[in-house]
Length: 380
Image (cartoon, rainbow, N blue to C red):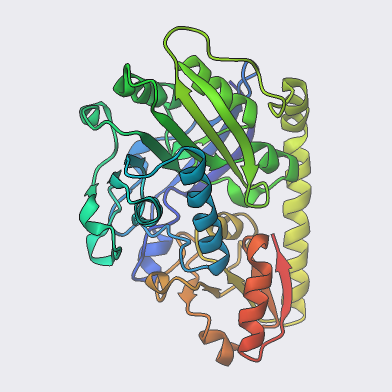
């Protein structure tokens, strides 16, 4: 691995709930040191220490309060159910979060399922399919190999795992000779992050970054044939559908797997390009501050933590609004901004709102206009 991007002293957890500003600002930090594999294109934080991360009941990751995300989730579930004929089947989800996607797959296909996640909270789960679902508040590992399924899904979890080859190898071993099993994984798309210098998508918990080529390579090496490899959600997500094979015939390279030369070039220029983009945002904030503008973020999750840690060194921004009610009146780690309900903005009346994910810009603008607000909208 060749190191190419370093960020010192970043919060090691960006989705935990902190009750006081003091607790948030004193939470432990770690370093990011991204390394690039010239052989397969895999990118990893070489300074990552899993002991510094926490996934528990106070981990608040759900995006399910957004109508835009709800539609994406529903459409994704429908597509997978139709493509793989998932009716009256058994489904296993690794990293199920609060259980929302597993519930969709079960409700829409009359399926039964099992979900693994230490952050699952039964008191918040509601579904007509609840009687067909089992949740285990633990990390999936070889000790759960006895749980077989017709369909195994894992969304936005693999990027949190450092030893990815070991993990996918464990999964393949647990499937064994059940060669009809379909696996579906979704991760952040690293080509976009590197190409667009999306520094807000680089944070401590995300220790592993995949391009289409490196993700496909990982699954082939573990004994899977790739059925589909695609990007979606405004090219932010990379998805792979695969099937285990008996032997070494894992298929051919797909057309949308990038050239390693292209990825090498983007990695080589990333430090200079990302520095330029970060400085542009610092200049934008400095200009707003000179004009005494009230600025808030919309979104208080990982992107907000990375953005604030990187560009808001003097805590000029005081608040981050979020539609997730479980995040309200908590605080951003390290930088200490208070997380508020959107309704707070009626009184605060911001002059500018920085949207942490541009895919939600229209949704957020409509919410602001409905409150009689029309601030300047800036989007990452």
